[in-house]
Image 1 (cartoon, rainbow, N blue to C red):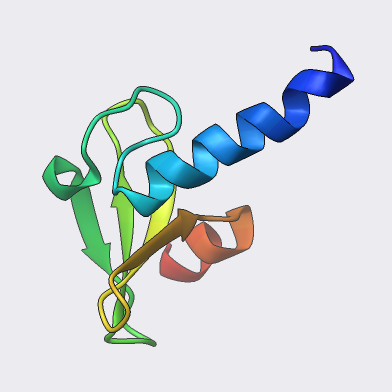
Image 2 (tube, rainbow, N blue to C red; image 1 turned 90 degrees about the vertical axis):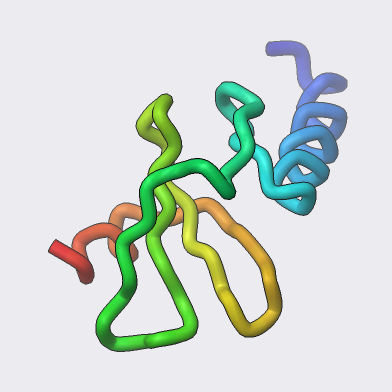
Length: 75
């Protein structure tokens, strides 16, 4: 990917996440599978049908991409 596309891609992905959509397939994360995080009642791991994982913070109504470390904590 040419370097000049990276900022455009990042802005697009940030906007999709802010609106509650998957950055991979564009589906709504409201319909995705959810697993509560036992160590933090305000957060859930949300897994889209395309297998991308996100952390949802109920308190601030915000999604972010889940890291491998986040996913390992639940398993």
